[in-house]
Image (cartoon, rainbow, N blue to C red; front, top):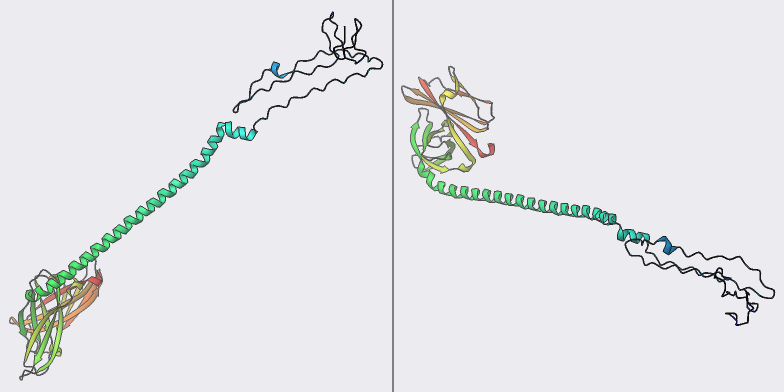
Length: 350
């Protein structure tokens, strides 16, 4: 029997080679112990999947436990061989825990959605808000444009209508009656046959016997549609020594007049004194009266003997207009009178 390490002959029953110190396994004896600690069986490296930890059985992880023998006393002159140091198998590199959590945990996708969804909502609200404001601004712009176009169209229609009426009105407003009073004053009655309220200017030109012009005098009167109105020229407006006169009628800017109404005498409160008429009118409308004209005609035996007039302006709603009509001169004798009143509503009082 020889040593399996150095080949030296061995006596039967020898357990250690006297030459090299290698343990000898006796063929007649069962293998019960090893003189040198055997190297542990290398642990198999299990390939772990990316998404889950591999399940490794305990039997495959734990190395087999070597059968330890009682150390034998070294033989004289023989250096025992040191037992080999088992090499520990390095485990396979594992993926980072954070990366595994980001890659494998379902909650991470939810957290991403939790961030993205509010951003999308904010952007959507911003887009809708901007779009809504843009649409609203366009709608308002279109409304303003349409309103401006309507106003322009209305103005153009008014200008066209005014030009047409300027040609028609002189034929529709005529001098119906002309009365020269005893004191020399003139009373002119004009009739408006149109459906418009009109302001007209009456101009008188006075001439002497040689037909030389002495001067002019003018009065403005407001005439309601399809009605009559007086133009009165008192002594103060006449030219001394005139022999004849001519009347000229011109249409004033009637677009400023919104409406002209005749006031019935029954709507007036009249207090007849000896030489004075105190007349009161209450504005029951909800708009300002721009101008109110009163003309009083005095008659004696159905003959017009005297005319008096007065005007008031800017009569507010709910307020009263008071007029005092005086008779100047004891020579004026009358048995009745008539009161003609008109109220004018102007555009600037609307």
